[in-house]
Length: 286
Image (cartoon, rainbow, N blue to C red; front, side, top):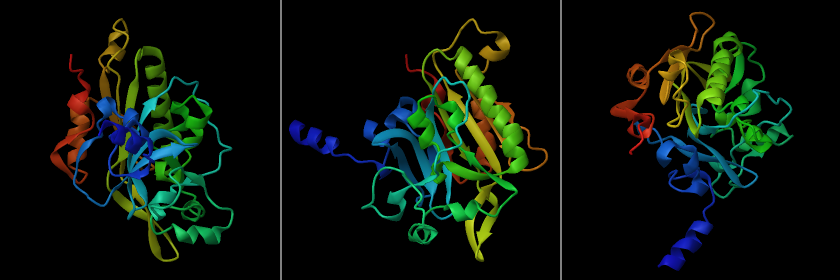
């Protein structure tokens, strides 16, 4: 039996997965290997985001609204530099289970995009919508390794963000968190960033194509942190959250304790009363 099991596990290929319960299926992107719990929908797809045959981060994706519900990743100390010359990619296994388990760049021929636009967003959806930017849930700026950075440029890691929100409060918040975790997190930092159900929808050719989230939210968990940090920073460890309205105005990011964030989200998402972002609320077992 033992021999059989190891052979099976070696053959594990990620992409669209049934769970995140194995390192090859992005388990290491989740605190205690446990994804957020309490989502009610059974139509969401779990994606182990692989690039160059290596698991990079975990995403739960809504193939009907064509947006990620959340991405979960480990933060890497970074200088915050953003790379913009990478090709945008898609997830082949959303379209067909037989496809590659790695994300792939969009084909040059746009007619090819028809093959998978039923299951996910394609470049054309973002082409003529000047009021929206592509907002990454796992941002390039929170990664250090060039390949990890490249992997954040999958449209399955992107939602439409109102331009003013994306370039203002959202970008500022991501930089605040980057600096905070850079300076005060001593161990591994796990981040989950997600959306609430949508208000508006991007339409193309008279069809609903991509949902526009009403709110964006994010939370981090870092159990090993600088105990000598000044109090105004220390109380935001080991875990803290934030949310913001994806709009032109009243769109500042509001930082809140984890329980407050979960309570806020319960009223705005299809989740049950046991909705929990981090296993045991990011309290270590010891």
